Length: 226
Image (cartoon, rainbow, N blue to C red; front, side, top):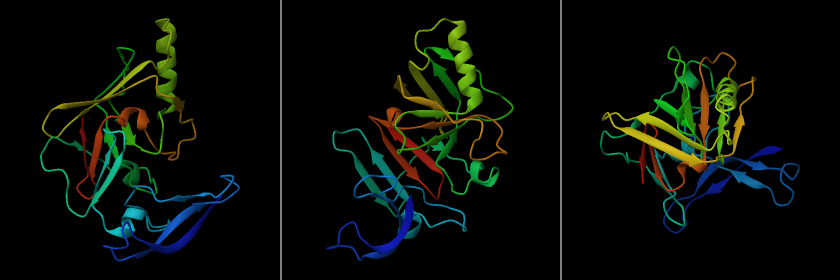
């Protein structure tokens, strides 16, 4: 399915010195035809797994800008977030629950579907992973079943019609990411981290479209700009 290769890479050969990078390649069993190359935007990983793309290149910040017809990816070795109006990122999934990589993960302050707030467990946080490789949304089994019961009780026509996820910034402001009828799947009972307590939501492109997502990896910050 996936084989690992090492080769020279540079964004611009005329202005940058190529580096020898390790990266994954899809085999023909997974993709009929020429396969594909895996780079990804995760930087920090546990030592026992393959190195990440960003971890090998030395970039500390990046911005995925989906506000225009032609999306852009900007990489920087300096911090790109210059104020306090950012959402703090947490490393709980890696440090507490032994996820092998440090996901770009934040704690939710509110989760509303079809205008109805979904009750979140106050004792344990609800985590959100921001994932540009996902089209819609994936949610933990408990959250999916809770939403299903709520929709049936209220006789709603759409299970995941209008979805809004809220976060609190360091400056005390609220940021909402929304989507209409995002493709939503349950993560299942066998989550990647069996010791995990609380709910997990993975937000994909349906929520990021029309925004610029800037992440300062080393400083654990994410900022959304319309």
